[in-house]
Length: 531
Ligand SMILES: Cc1cc2nc3c(=O)[nH]c(=O)nc-3n(C[C@H](O)[C@H](O)[C@H](O)COP(=O)(O)OP(=O)(O)OC[C@H]3O[C@@H](n4cnc5c(N)ncnc54)[C@H](O)[C@@H]3O)c2cc1C
Image (cartoon, rainbow, N blue to C red; front, side, top):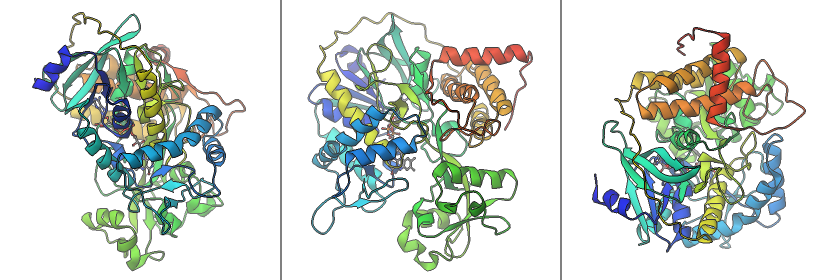
């Protein structure tokens, strides 16, 4: 046990923040000089989707643009489920949060007159994406915030610890159980915490094909759900249509901008398949393209991104990151089509929070991708996630600062479940089942199989990390099974139409388990499944 962890146990007045991505670090900085402890599974700057963001942050800062237009685009993208007040609030506060980021040292790109340079992305009606050195926004933002955090004496950072359980008493947070990341048999450490902000990111690594780092395996969502927190819209998952399939996990991303430059999608026979799917062909909305690619792969025809004619020799210069990923895999994208597949990219659902970022348990706040504010509805508008992370992190800090410091509650000794070694094969199978059964195209039969399988893992496994993965997987699959319509990122081949009534999901792990039990009664002997 490190000294800093030992110190922390005796210093329980701190606000504890789980997660060191954009949401966690921004919240910690906004809380300064109030003492804060940030616990993160990976060293700062690593293991966070924030560092991988390529596009940037959406903010209506350009002449001729307005927060109202930004909110309208956000609402339109979300397929009827965006909370309009939340969308307007996000758009209005964007400019102030960009100013904060500038103060923390983020070197956003500027035009010749010194104004913030703004780019355009799909489904935005104006140029409003602030960026850094072209496609380096995430890396630059996280580097600046990491430096600011390291220079702030009130922030203590504990790296390399995984939060694996929330401790509660009478519906209020009392503490957090941690374990050294990657060491399932290490002794767990218990921290008293009555003010906890979860900022642990997304769920990409519950899928075998994802653009997210391994730390995004849904554990933050699972521990909140296991403690009884309400979870909103877990079935809404965004898949990026063009992850590069070169045997890497996570899969490198072939940015949408390539299609913007004229690159086309081909199947293995060399035929373009998108023109028959949507009038905008390769530039159709992200979920439509993802389904088009998935259908070709499911039919065994293969799917490729072909930039030979559109970019050719200019590829390396215009898209150096994608070019490097291809070359490392022995593919020269100027000469050959790039093999692709849809990949889990972003989770719209998460811990249900109100306008102050408060979850349903006393003492619990959540920010960033682990939360669900209602801003994204059934489909996220590009570059709104970094914005949501900073807007809600700032609101949470303000809310916490406005409260009395909660005196620490004595922690009663709680039994620690024995943990066995991480069962890699079972985890790989869970991820494969998420991709094949709870992925881009869903149906009742496969969702029901997935629900039964995840409920059984959740109940029976002796490994806490796998149990947490299964809890989140169960929430996603059970809510996808219950939603008998297609909307935004959720597509049911057996219910292809959008229902007349737009309704959000508010659920709990207990309700997801009930769905699984209902299925078990229908089929007495659950069959183990493999993807
Ligand atoms: C390749 C890629 C490109 C993207 N591009 C954009 C873009 O251009 N614009 C945009 O708005 N969005 C983009 N997104 C989405 C966006 O990056 C994320 O939604 C956002 O960064 C999430 O921030 P976060 O702070 O919530 O989580 P993260 O940045 O993922 O940080 C989570 C933190 O929690 C830690 N952690 C996880 N579990 C635990 C645990 N159990 N205990 C302790 N610590 C834990 C992690 O190590 C990490 O420090 C992109 C995502 C990807 C993957």
